[in-house]
Image (tube, rainbow, N blue to C red; front, side):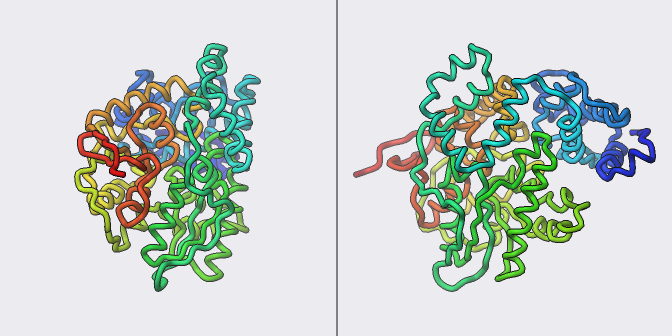
Length: 445
């Protein structure tokens, strides 16, 4: 693709990167076949190719974003299925991230849109505020239909996705150091995140259990990685969060040392692995950011390198594995989670149309509730085709989104691994003996 940026424009590192990305696109259109919004809407402007043209025109002209451009960029899930499909290696992630930042700095959204986006940017990364909001959401959940009828669709979507009950796992607030059982074989950092500790603290608890059970010391740290505000186009807020994480993990690396920095939410892991790029022009953080990115691994990546010893027999339990977009498309991790579950004795089933997003995509299911609902309905229908006993995923956003559309239990892959290696059954399965072909029977007393 030819571009026509001026030399003055190309002096900006982000514009220069956008120019490099745009020039790799050859207009082939292969991306349209695997783009969820194009598959659902059939509009060229809601495909990666269409959005690339819109972004190119906006950036080359150096003009503020228009409402039409914003509409189509907002509809993008950043699922990155297009990057898996693209034969030319177009780095769509960095391009659309730059477009979102440009929109945020040049476009004046309607007042209610600004309110919702500001609320999400302030609320979700703050563990304490989010806990309080979630408690209120559970009480107000029956009013979701009313709020939707009143046109308050983002609020209705938030209430509909609120988990019906508080997790029984004790929240690990603030993190800490967890000693291994027996001789220490390794030492890792674990980014607890901001949403997982509130909605499902059992995920990080399971990760810590599995790691310490197999001789790995865990240094856990709470706090937002910056992904939520990053996808809202708040580039500087995302960089601030990234700097805080880089500083904290650098202190551990240069202290007692770390073999890896682990993440249980693949959406967060995708951004942490990109810290080196995000902070490449920050002279005070660039080197350490690149080091943290190199050390970052998804929990499934790291566990795949350990010798895990299953002690419980779960043969016959059918697991539908949902491959989060941030794992399969962004991080290119496809086999490790499924192989781990298979080795633990579970019967792992692939889901039809696994490449298509479930509609979670950070705050997408709140800000674009109608499209997210359509995508969830499609995803749940495909999952239910394989008649699983349980659904496993590697991202809290996907888990929350899918659980809102099905009665099948949804858990994190690491929770099943913890169960298989001697831990307690996941809360969603506790008190039940899961049988094959989607049947559940009461556990013996």
